Image (cartoon, rainbow, N blue to C red):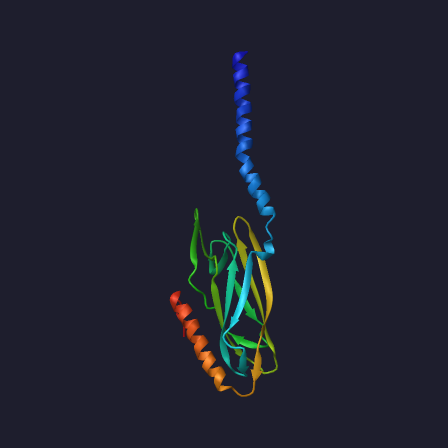
Length: 193
């Protein structure tokens, strides 16, 4: 009888310990449920120029702000994930491929991924096709992941002014801004041409 009581006591103790072990997981899951997934990634476009002449080309930077502990993917995502995409309206501009900064390598067991976290900056070079526009439309899509992955996208309009004659002042401003972009890229060991 005494051994049966001891076995029941040990059984109940094991159940209590298992319940206590599950409490942090339940609390963590409850915290996850309160996250506003629409605010995990913010994207801010930074145009090299706001005034252009038809046929001009320029760089546009896209600064991502990614929630702590979350990440998005590089062009070669790795064993899982999807690459980030930046696509302008093809009727408005000719566009280059994305100019990627160096990604972080994330290893989880046998899975290796190439990701960005924090505030990465990706660039695209564009060239205007026509002079009848007051903004550039761009669609950006990404997969944001932590313990789960969520596909997200946004459509942005970047205001521009198309001029018929280039102002000398805008040439000076462009050289100054382009110099800042080159310094930013150089500090991140990104080749720029």
